[in-house]
Image (cartoon, rainbow, N blue to C red):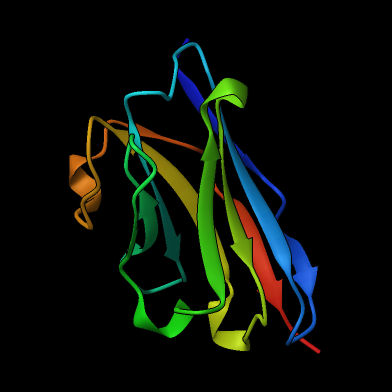
Length: 123
């Protein structure tokens, strides 16, 4: 069974950090781009960051520039989203998604999705 599983979400105070993980099972991520998307109630799912199969990253959300970073370790079949200096407006359900071979901000073009992990930012 081809599956993506996110983990690492939780409650953090403004200014805090979280590291989200996206682990694949049933297939290798080596030739896939992995995108991180987030969604809040009543809004469309929006692209945040993406990393191509070759490690090149793309930022789709200007507000996270300089605070969020994406990385991958193909040997561990995992992609991470490091989120620093979190703000209240960063809260939402974060999803990772896979498509081959390169990134796109268009969520409908991704082939595999995780179940999402909740991020809450509150004092």
